[in-house]
Image (cartoon, rainbow over the protein chains, first blue to last red):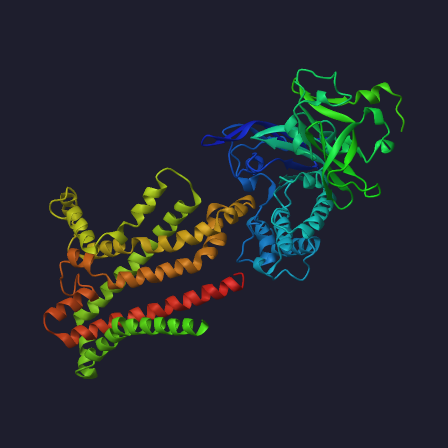
Length: 356
Length: 274
């Protein structure tokens, strides 16, 4: 696969705040990439650096193999969708979308054709003469998308594209955007702080924190083998335990990490009594501290050896209540040592023949 | 409860109306009344007096030049103050407001010091045969100075609230700085700009203090309308003074009407997403 975007050792500081701290990353042509991380982690800065709206203090930016440092935003072949859309409010939908074509002096007839095609693409047929303030949030977002696409960029950059849209429309728009971008085959990078959004929309995810890249890869790869505690913590809902050696099945596994571990809800099996457990002898006793309805399952917070763990339980099973005694089996725990992840499996599973 | 509030608000409205009547409407009516006190013929003679016409033309010229220069300067400084971050930004903002804070008479004295006989500039100016002080250039300069902040101060809040993202969007779409200004920034600020222009024009026409110090009061050459009125008044030529004053009143009323029209348009535009 050809490389469309490459950043090499990018540094960018605002005063004493280091927004980009030795950032290197690559994006393959045609991929839809999610730049994921907490607010203030430097994601938007990376997007603006790629667009040329900011210039790096050090490092190189390559687009399609060409070094782009110092090249004006309009000459980089990028389209940018701003978080607040930044639509020209004194222009109609048509005029907004046509703006880039007008600047490029595309013949009027061709402009009209392209604008009409884009208006159809974003499902706003018949609304071309409206002003941005007369549109809903989702519609404005689509107009911003069409405006960025109009000059046929080779790279589309989207800054928190769904942040300002209400929950229901957001769901729809995510699916629509993913489909549309894939159909057009345009390389795209979008910024988000919402891991669900990144997992649902992106082909690849780049996780950033404190101005540097923590991990890059497919959502599945990142989910299954987080490289740092931060990634393990940020992707999925996780619980930290200061010393996992207290749990049955993990007593001998203490390594250089000193026993700190991360447990995900799906690593837990929570049963009402021993009869429900596959490996009752290897299970811990716990006390249910909270039960929350999560739509398709129940979230059960259970205290085991003084530590609160979080697990899920099927709605089909016997309901648990706060204060109930429960059985808990821990399948595996993530630990981190020497800059890498280790997955510890429960000793009971290693010793006994697996019964599935 | 509600009734009490009604009485209170009526009282306030009545008070405001009385205040406006005594301080604004009555003097305007009296000016016109005094101007016409000795008949329309005397009135027409007073305002068609060659000195009065010269003063009117000078006032209009100073106003047009001051407003034009300050429009350019206002756009540039508002752009600088809202679209860029740099050290000393607060200081520049404060300096722009200086003409608001300083008495116009003091401003006039600045120019006397700057271009007068004590100034190191004076020999150079004399060499080049340029007369600044007690001539039209000083009148124009003084007018530019006192109307300096109006347009900037109207533009800055609007440009601040709009942010930079529309300009950035234009940049990513390939627009040059000039294209961005012309197609994106200017349409967004046009009402505020026009409003600032009108306020600056009104202020320029009425300026007395600074111009009085630098003009030298030469009839037919460096007298603006307000200075001409003062001279007539000091000569006990009250009817002529009020007649010429009524010219200024008419011009002010026209500008006020324009101001209200602009405000109304701007509000309407907001509802239309314009």
